[in-house]
Image (tube, rainbow, N blue to C red):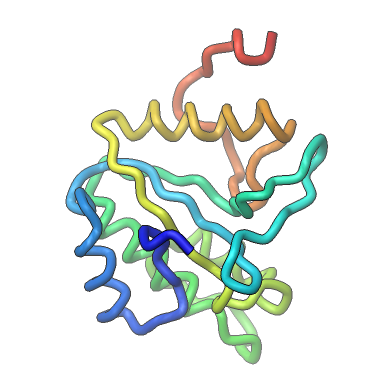
Length: 157
């Protein structure tokens, strides 16, 4: 496994130490949430193809990746307990609620995150999502909307 993946299921302190060790985690940018199985990305069936990277979500922050991805980690871990009767409101609340709904099917042990620093995160997120949609004909499973900008429509021509 590439060393720039962050394993979600670890204590907050260890997660933040690993996140801080990644180059440019104190910049804005995009991040991706992945589903792994046996230490490698799990193939996800999509509408028109198989996603062999196992991407569940593509997000962005104009703030520090360190803070936003830290909040994502908190939300996923807080919503991973299968015995809870309602979702925890912690960190990245919307993804936390989405994960709560599927936590019995996708174990937190199988979730990983990657960061991608970028000076224009809104554009980078739009580009990453539109690239995904162009390939698979739908948004990543946990994304609820497209990026902030219209894409380069020529990719669909």
